[in-house]
Image 1 (cartoon, protein in one colour):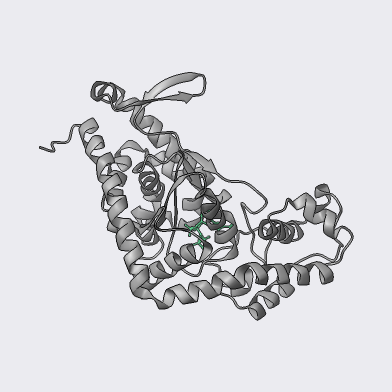
Image 2: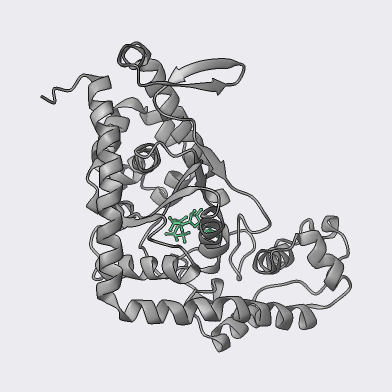
Length: 351
Ligand code: AQP
């Protein structure tokens, strides 16, 4: 059975991009896989060290997972900092990965801005912790938005370098598994994890600027639809979304160089579980004055039940905390099993 891992940072209100690009996939994968979904609170420290409400943000992301349909009994839901092995493996991966690999990450370049010397070391090492999150469970699949693709490639690079560097010890301990790398069959301890990216909503853009991704940290609230927005807010944001004066085309080609129009079509497709081409078949030749209200109705229909369920779950703080505690205990058992082997592979004294 595939083993799925993914995480979301408790850095602010979840938005439609997080939902369509990631959480909706988390829910679907539960049917076919064993899933571990994590609120990655240690990752959020890379953006900002001091939060007034980190614990409440962590609970709120957990409530969003549960409200969206993640089952914490059949699968595992927990917050990263409870399982200290994430930080332990990240340290080892800091020593496996190369600084040049980290320097090339576009997310680091974007977030560090011009003053790179002053960015936190944690921001640079972020992908190393992410690789640890995934490989601690030897996850085979990671559902993420398009923006995380490069980090997933780096996770494979780290796994591959670890497998290569320690190949003799992995073989001597008999802890490797056979895997295919290109043409070659190799024996490694860590799998080369596959990203699960794709569909019409893998990269949802800002409602104000079709060249920027929808993001929690955009200062304009009009740029995103939050999972907690009410029907009025959703309708208003879609009404005000930037568009062009043309009608919708009948073919996908007609959306080329119309990023805002393409984004709204992608959002519709993601919410309705249709392809963009089918959305265009339905709305070909229509103006945004027709398409936007239809999109707003669909968004309200899909998001309102999640928002109200989130509120209901959030009111029961003891329940949310119990889910995270229980998930943390179960994740901790799996994590320690991996770390015992990793310490043996490296040769750290454990007896
Ligand atoms: N715009 C997006 N479209 C599709 N997927 C997206 N994701 C984020 N933005 C979009 C996916 O959501 C998951 C959780 O993201 P995260 O919270 O761990 O980190 P992030 O990518 O940094 O999210 P934000 O909202 O954009 O936050 P800021 O503003 O802090 O950068 C991931 O799978 C991500 O791909």
